[in-house]
Structure formats: structure tokens, C-alpha cells
Length: 306
Ligand SMILES: [Zn+2]
Image (cartoon, rainbow, N blue to C red):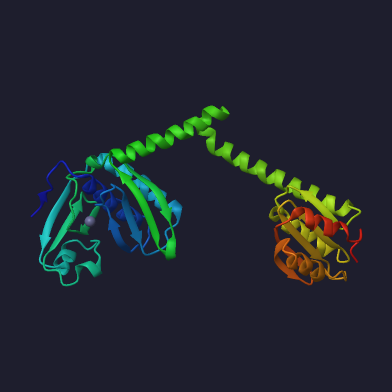
């Protein structure tokens, strides 16, 4: 016999019922998900869903949209009791349940959300989906191969969505962009950065190419940005050996046809504690401890390292 759940649900019940709809939505997207735990009755009002599989972001957000489409349909949430899971499965062949949690359980309570979801569950629920108001994913992480979804429901979800909207509008006002054009705007900005990065790399490599010294003082550059370019340069210029000193990093590479002994200079700097890092026959890379003294040592080297 079906009985309706009492109205005026708690925050936990709102989160919990939304979790049922969300889990079923993921299943309806063709995913074979296994919920390890749904944590929705916490004192901080946060909702968490732990899924044993890695679920792609797009699927999670598609399911989120499905939950928000379903909520205003105001489906009734009803309960039904069965002696055991096999009796419940006989009536509802698509019932969701967690085998670990049903072990040795006498009597099963089934929670039905309209004809959308059937699940074995003992927790408190809303009486109809309209009480959920809204559902929002606020964070997704993939620690240890699991998917952890943090979500909000009810007015918490509405407030979260309003706040998110406000920050997007602030960006739009600041840069004079229409909200509908924000994703193109961000894409253009990312393309511009990538474009300038590659121009900067070309300039940096030209600087090395045209330098009449093999020791080059590069000031305040962010060296790791140029690793790839310098490696490529060395592959094409196997007779060169290049030492680059920035304000905080020493980086040197020797081409395979060059016989300058980088290890000697590296060991000297290490021993005198001017530098810490990696020193090999053909490579130096590490942190500058005493820039001025390193510079003095490097100025004592010949112009061409051969
Ligand atoms: Zn439940």
C-alpha cells in the first residue's frame, strides 16, 4: 500500500530526495553507477554523493539539468514496505539498492518518486519533488578513482546559483561583455595568452641564437615556460652549450657535440652554496641562492663554451 510522506521536510530530506533523482538521472544517461555513500544529513547542510566509478563532468552536469527539469513536475514521493529485497524487486524490477547496506535487513522500505525512481531507502524524504525547488552541483573531485559530488538543494541551491550568476554579471560589466558571449570571451582570452606565450618563446630562442655569449643573463623570466624551446634549440645546435641565469634559477644545457664540462662549474656553485639543484655532465637546473656571486663566477667563463 502506498502512503505519502509527511510534508515540511528538513534540509537533509530535501538534499536526500534530490540525490535519489540525481542518481537515477545518471543511470538514465546509460551509466552503470554504484553509489558508495550518500551523505545528506550533515550539520553543515552540505550534500555529498560518493560514486565508485569515475563519471565524466559532462554526464554529471547533464544529470543535474535532468534533476532541475523534473523538480517542477511535482512528482509525489511515496513509500511502500516489503518483507525483503526480492519481494520488492518482484514488483519493481528497476529498483535501486545498495547490497552492502541491505545485508541481514529484515523488511525493506521502498521510496518511489513518481514513476521516475524506485529505491530501497530508510531515510527521510520530501513529500513531493516541488519541495526540492532547485538542485546544483557545487564541486566535483576524482580522488582515488571515485567520483565525489558536492551539491546543494532547496534555497541553498537557489542562493548558490544567484551568487554564481552575480559573479558572472560582475565580469560582464567589468569587461563590457554580454552574458551570452562570456564563453567566447573566455576562449578568446585563453587563445590570446597561448598566442603571446608562443611569440615570447620565439623571442627568447632568437635571443639565445643571436647572443655572442653562451652565458646569458635573462633577468626576471619565468624559466620553465621556455624549457621546451631551449631543448628544441639544443637539438638543432648540438655544438652549443648554453647557461641561462635568471634572478632565481640557473638552467644550463649542453649539446651532444659540445665538450664543455658543465659538471665542474655546477659542482663549484653547489660546493660554495650559491646554488642548489641538479648537476650532471650535460645539464644544470636549480635554484639561485646567491645571484651576484653566481654572476661573478659565470662572467669569469669564456664567451663561447666549447
Ligand atoms: Zn535514500
